[in-house]
Length: 406
Image (cartoon, rainbow, N blue to C red):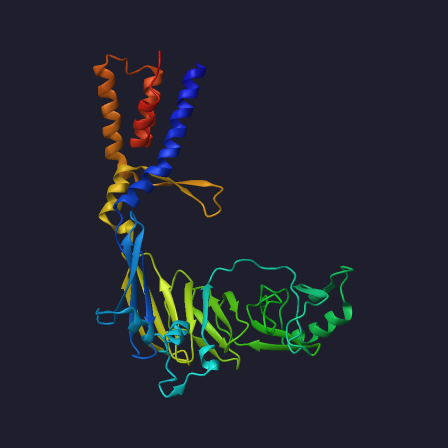
């Protein structure tokens, strides 16, 4: 009895190993298609540039190809000259960096105006206690204060980090302007950059219990509080420590807004139900890239956040190919490793894809047993048949690797 249990364990272990390696080996053997597609907008031609990486995954070879908006392939050097903000360093080394663009001198200030970030509608985390930095310090840089604050039903409270006691006078001083502005306690959300790794501090954007938005910061030790009119329910706020923007704001529909440092609120004409944006901005344009399962769209906006153009490229994913359909018909599931390399998760395929091969493997098993004049209804054969029926090709191989011994 013990030997039969060990055999079943070995079969299951073999299934686990095969479910990890076989689908991966199959994909690497047949996948020969573009790795990724990137869309850019040229500040020179005021049109789109497409970059596609293609190659052979089996031989681990890849190369980039560049195309204009009409689909004509262009050489790499021309591609770099059409995107001077993306290739500043290389163009300078080649002596091809222009002195001006669109009548504007490309000085260091303009070249350094490029900003890149990833915006996600879903909030990562929320700190219960936050440090309030001095927004106009005497020395350049941001210094960590001796206290942190929270906003509960009693109002804003500053806690001394050493004594763990509430600083009554400071709490009262900062609580007063919030009350005068009609702040409804407690706060639903507090958004900012609670880090000293920034050049300056802009305070926090706070959503009160009535979904109203406020800006709170400290200037020369005194509170600054301003209400920002916003129609809708705020889901998340992504703050920025530099540039012309205070933050990007997401509502509960994943619609995105920008709040400028002049407190102007602009609704971005960008559609993205997934709530994930790749943002690049420079002196001439703001671009928002949205990736979906089978397409990538680049929205180009003016410095005033008006839509100028948009372009969509279809992404040639392996999951949509004929090879992937064959994989799904062969392997009933596959084991994938999580990014942390510590856990393995099974990813099942829909039953309609692989049940035919599972039935064929189970039928072949029965035929072989009948040819060998074995009794089908023995418990060990029933167990093997069930394993094959559920795990298909994995179980079929595993059962014959570890055959039943009398």
